[in-house]
Image 1 (cartoon, rainbow, N blue to C red):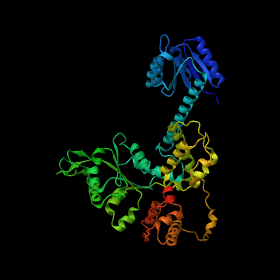
Image 2: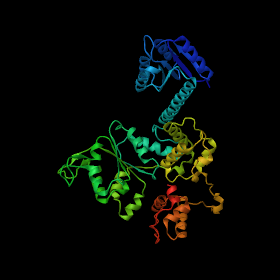
Image 3: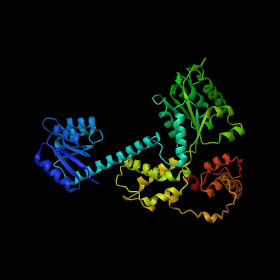
Image 4: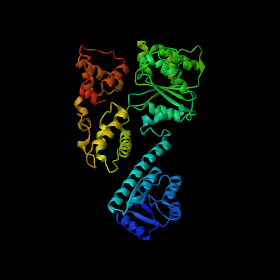
Length: 472
């Protein structure tokens, strides 16, 4: 692999020669230019990895050269050389896009550190950009990482659905990327240049949700001191993402159903509706069919939303995607935390793949950021990983499973395992979740999925154990 090439621009022949010699001794390839015009000609012929330029030069100044490079070659970083008495000029140059500056007389150790730092920073930025570009070319959904069949199947359906105005219902566990998928659908639709507006139906108090969603007119209730546009109005001609739609109160479900059916918005306190053009994408981690049976979610609204249903798989079902996700979040965290030299050995990747990630992609990203921040040395070791990644899991054969010759339903096995765990702990969901090594929320989700009615013991209201919180 060829060493990075650095272009040195200075009208001082001796300084150019010394800098070239020093950089070549450090292992870089170095070329020189005596003025700004010659530098631009050299860059046009063969763009370097870095430009090192003096600020004060006859003809085209270093500042002029910097501005030209930032305009025509924004991917090339620039280091400024300035006299000690003109540091203010260097600060101005950094405001104009220079990465850093060095003062004369140049300390060559400082030069080596500055050059190494800027090249590594831009290398990492380039890796992130290339990763995003490759995902865009491969999937068309540039922010959704993975190549597993189960994910690609969902993305293929989502990409085709994006071109329509049909409502979409995304079902996924918490942290699996519901909003990311919804944004990808919007930005690959004909509405991409219009607003994408999100409202989390579970994060807003019930008495405020209607006003947040539909808006209100002045004087419609105590405290309504002015007209307010709701999320629906803000999303006009764009996409409205109704996150956690399963948390929406029944009375509002009726109004959302009317909104979808008739395309009319009626603000709180308004006397007449107005026409609205909004594409609806909803998402939930709950089992809406079970909620329909319980009478807590409207069946007619469900079918209006689920014209195109998408089930985004949890991370535990995308094991082959985990190394790619780990590398993506690791590079991102290194850039954000300023740790370009940190190394994650490939030998540690199986630790990430063996864990079930009940918090899904959000949990994985947070764990990697924590590792990057807290690791002391320049290479991550097993000791730097959280305890739940270091812990060895018991072998599957210890469960003494007997597989029948005629086959078995995975859904039935999961349901039976949950029932046995609940029975073992007399219906205590927290203890059963700890035993199954999942969070209590994940257990409740699976109970709803399998139609298991909640078995609540006398002590079910106790606080979750530290281990349960850690696994989220």
